[in-house]
Amino acid sequence: MKMSWRERVYLTKKSQKESMTRQFAKDIQSDENMLPLIIKGDVNGSVETILNILKTYDADEECILDVIHCGIGDITENDINLAELFKGIIYGFNVKAHKSIQQLAAKKKVKVKIHNIIYRLVEDLQEELSNTLPLGVEEDVIGKAAVLATFEVDVGKHKVSVAGCRVQKGQLNKKMNFKLIRNGECIWTGCLSSLKHHKEEIAIAKTGMDCGLSLNNNLKFEVGDEIVCFSPKEVKQIISWEPGF
Image 1: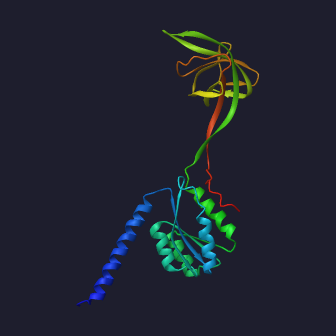
Image 2: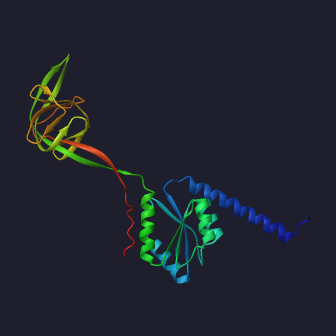
Image 3: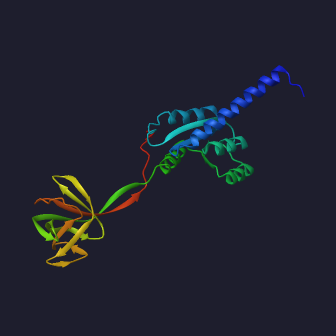
């Protein structure tokens, strides 16, 4: 079938647009820390209010926030398909997602979130942004000890630095991680090679106990150093963006 000039121009532009959309979607999908959004509202004023709030977003270094589409009216099949393509989330304000749309969203694993209070929508968005962040690591301090004396012992052909310590808080557990603090600065992190009470090797030194310990390197102790026993734990990070209400 022969096409008219107008039909050829229309199909060319449509093909170019679809190609650009696919490429843009591919680029977005390659960035793990990006959250594409579709915003739907009941009236122009609602959408404009939400977009103005999103203009205050200042945490792009943590997660890029990208509004790929906004519009008026209920959630549609096109919204679901677009969110699937860009791996995004749909936020609706005072609109509906009919049962067939909900079923399509579930099938395509697209999140559809509808609110009727704007600050609740923003709180929900903050939570979703936080969910994109990698887990952070915090230190759960188990015990602390002060270095009261230092000396060296012969181990084979080598001399090993030993700290004579007193546990001041909690306990030292040889299986855990340790830090050496000097003048308020951490100068070493690692494991103990030895933990002794008198001449006996022990697993745990409790509060008030005197003990001798050595590290798994050749670092020299100094009187006044602090030994910190800790266990690292993963914690959820929170997005730094504060919209201001």
